[in-house]
Length: 191
Image 1 (cartoon, rainbow, N blue to C red):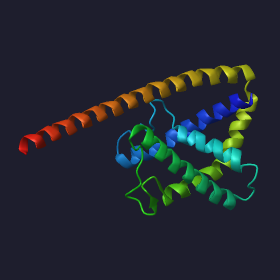
Image 2 (cartoon, helix red, strand yellow; image 1 turned 45 degrees about the vertical axis):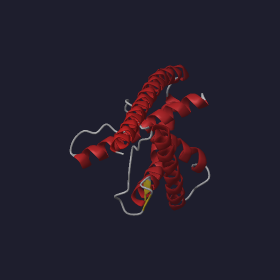
Image 3 (cartoon, rainbow, N blue to C red; image 1 turned 180 degrees about the horizontal axis):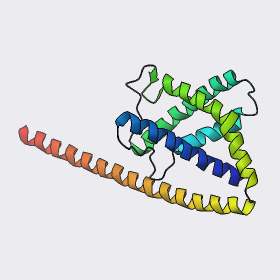
Image 4 (cartoon, rainbow, N blue to C red; image 1 turned 180 degrees about the vertical axis):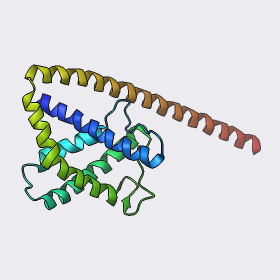
């Protein structure tokens, strides 16, 4: 049951992250913005980040200020690594903080670190304990069925999205190759 509950928490925190990101970006842009690189209503970086905070810090940090600082650092490092890996895999950036003060390569910024620290304190002291109480009340069979259904939907979304992104990347590479060939031929004609 441990893995079932952990997966359900991952999905819940991914969904909460999607709500946060979608509301924030929609308000800033003045229109609905569906955040995340997947199609469904979840941002896995929030799910993974929350699980990391819970696993690495919850049982070891008793002081809220220490939790805030450590989770800010951990979440920021995780966000930086995620940004780097996604960009290398898909040749695309899903967020860019270059226009914000105190950013590192546009991948992370101080404001984001502070927000992640505050959200982590809320997560550890309020959201996660409530989530665990709700999971404890549900029947193990219901949790397994829900986890399997969510896994199928999530895995399908990941497969479809990654396949689509790789096709786009291949298409961009093909256009770039055609352009390079064209430029070479134009240069040969000129000379």
